[in-house]
Amino acid sequence: MPESTAGLGKRTVRDLELAEGERVLVRVDFNVPLEDGRVADDARIRGALPTIELLRAMRARLILCSHLGRPKGPDPGTSLGPVSDRLGELIDAPVEQAPAVVGPEVRRAVERLQPGGVLVLENTRWEPGETDNDPELSEQLAALADAYVDDAFGSAHRAHASTVGVAERLRPAVAGLLLEREVSTLRSIVEAPERPLVVLLGGAKVTEKIALIDRFLDTADELLIGGAMCFSFFRAQGEPTGNSLVEEEGVELARRAVEKSESSRCELLLPLDLVLGASFDADAERRVQESTDVPDGWMGLDIGPATAEAYGEQVARAGTVFWNGPMGAFELEPFAAGTRAVAEAVARASGTTVVGGGDSAAALAEFHLDDAVDHLSTGGGAALELLEGKQLPGIEVLDDA
Ligand code: ADP
Ligand code: MG
Image (cartoon, rainbow, N blue to C red; front, top):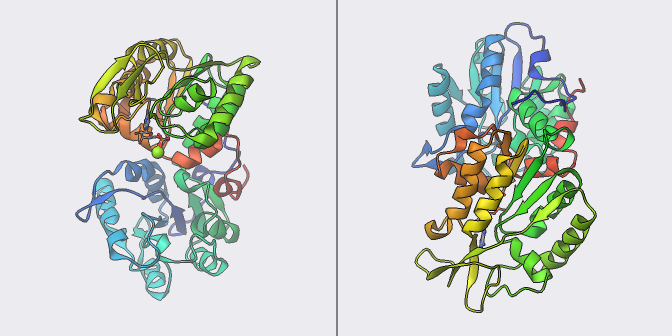
């Protein structure tokens, strides 16, 4: 992948000058799925390893913190204990699990840490002040350490105590390596992409993606639409959509996007054919429709084979590909072919390939193609906001380069 020209503009962990044993609070994204008290998918933990290993090599004392799930208070089912166990295996060194987020026992655990040692605080959402960006909690977190590193890209769009409040009170405050890579890769897509820039957008809701559609109509060369959101476009054009998922508020937005595309450099492509189902069900009656008309009693649940092929050709000739949102209801095997075909085309593409979004990442993983793309973003909402051109509070607050 070419080096990004769109820099982060913030100091990073590489710029830190630490004395041996200095305490560094690192906000990581350990919001991982747990099953039977174990980590079911450790991708996010592995994503944080470069920053963790660098700080250990610098002989810092590491204090890691993250949220996990959405608990409203202390809740053993969302303890970071299983994450600490897995992290210990990955770095092949002891990792201590603190009993709380802040407080006297946590301070004592920090005192006991050796240079290069690692302590994981409890789930930040066990503290009600976390999501309120509470000054007192922020102060207590800041008092634990001598420096702050933010490596939690997936939380950078939220102004919480562990992402913003603490960074306002603790200097230096710098970016971790994962955060740096995420931001510079995603920014380069809109600011300096290798052309043609081909963007594939799918998923359920136009209203969630309209800001992105708008931005890419200004910057992309091809915008390929799939997923349920195509039906808002078809409805806007007066085509029959049957029982397909149509978001009423999305129809007018879709109409305006089509209008904008007429005077834009960007070509907006809609599906040419569909796979229909009698209901949202893997056992439902299924048929391929060679047009995009959806008769009464049917719903469009996937793009058809001609669309998959046309989109695949665009992806193959792209200099840069960005993909967000499945092309159909891929969780139902009979309606997964369009998403699978597009995922395979992205995996094969010679251009730079970047994928963002929770369900798109899940689809790639299901097809075992997650290692075949250049960059799989760990931050769903944060990635979309960054691409829309919004400032992310967790990044803004860090020290300027
Ligand atoms: P991401 O998480 O990658 O941003 P979204 O959350 O926007 O993606 O969309 C994913 C959801 O969209 C999936 O649950 C999928 O089943 C649904 N979806 C996609 N196409 C259709 C369709 N034609 N009909 C119903 N649901 C669909
Ligand atoms: Mg989703």
